[in-house]
Length: 355
Ligand SMILES: Cc1ncc(COP(=O)(O)O)c(C=O)c1O
Image (cartoon, rainbow, N blue to C red):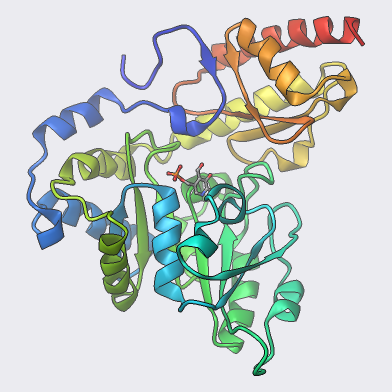
């Protein structure tokens, strides 16, 4: 069956391991195609129109990955040498190979947030005064949900408060919304509420929404026109990209509401983990599909713990030396969580006995 791995392994490393549904595979086969660099792929055009409408913005652009979406957006929002304020644990800062500096030529200005959210006062204090010595601060980036904070949700109120500052100082506000639909589902609000106060944003198709490839950038028409050119410059002009867009359309139509199931499974997992001796979970952070578990009470490090789980057919990922990340997704059902908890219980018992 599509969407579920056949091997029997329970893979909680990330929601990027999701597989496309049967319906997506059929849609790929039947997609009407054309050369998208000429703007002639009807399936891509349809996805981009749908995405813009869904976010309440003027236009959208399909790109191959979340990393490219962020890079294209950074470049399209700034000029070389500008300063970009972003959260210190953000994906752009941690996991995008320094493209913000190496390719975009920008100066990242990291600020530590609270559960992933930037404090407007800290942002205001970090904006460079106009002075011959300083680079110009041009952009503030937020991340919703915030991956390294544990899938925490940034609310429309928090975004609006930041947008007041960015508007006052003539800056732009950009959202890495790779998992924005998880945030909208968790808050039970229309995703437009989250998109409203940012100038532009991106979201991923290839994570919880199960598409094989793709992210979408959304914003006003001028910005998207610039982004289209930058995408081409970076080699992201994809010819018959309707094969990517076709499952994206299914994702937007059918895969959003079910994210609630992933959130329920994450809560089930988190509560189970919190009951296991030697493990600690900050349950306040378990707001969507990500669970961070602190294993320092076992006297082991994350790599040792992950190896013990792997031996038993459970995959998790390393967040830090003593924190392990587990992510729920379409390929994970309630029974997988129950089995995962049994495996974790056994592994922790073994590690505790060696302490
Ligand atoms: C918050 C966030 N932004 C961006 C990305 C990058 O997406 P991609 O893996 O498609 O490049 C990820 C990937 O996990 C992510 O979690």
